[in-house]
Image (cartoon, rainbow over all chains, first blue to last red; front, side, top):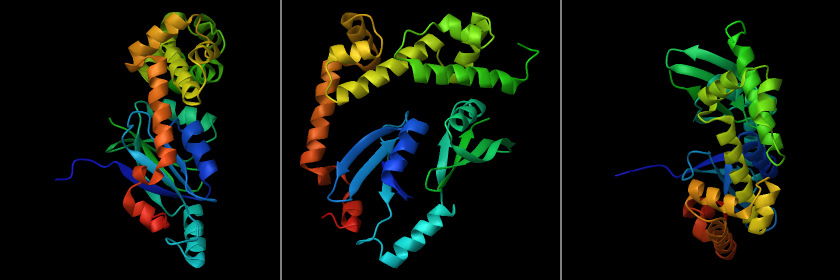
Length: 136
Length: 138
């Protein structure tokens, strides 16, 4: 029986820049930050109220996972906003929108009332997009 | 309050929060923030609480404790963390820290430093095998 999810991964273009985005702008906490050899790093962050969900910020690099060609294609896809990774939740969407905008987060959809609740869309520093929601 | 558009009120409260985020290490006069936000203190506290679920004072304490945790994780002394986030005394800081986190600052620090050392010594024990394998780390 599956009980919960504890790791998800997001592909990013630059782990240091992603660290700054998720920690300094979104307010996430670093869970694990381990150097894994030259240019390699295992970096996970957690949302403030969900310390047991590690979001791995995975660098798109050539190696066992990507060839030089597929890494270049993957970078292009991420950069152009192909991937939507999930829905974050907040208690007050308008306030969170204003705060993140003031911190330089780019929104592609302002807070909008939908039939399922209130929603805005934003992009991370790599180009991955997320929904930010507030339940009605 | 009713004469202001709702979005304007949000902006004021958000700015107050951002001010606390940026100035938690200084001696912040929360009454002054309410004045600058053009609110009566009562309305300011009520609006802030409705948005963030805590009063400005509670939020300021939260930010200070969270920043103190970062200093402790860096290996700084309890006294350093205490005064760096603008608490007046180590005993009041320690008491508040324990009420908020369930641990004394020193207990918290030892636990976090032990975790960091364990990760540094055996990182693969903290990385799901499937990821480590795909990355060629095992």
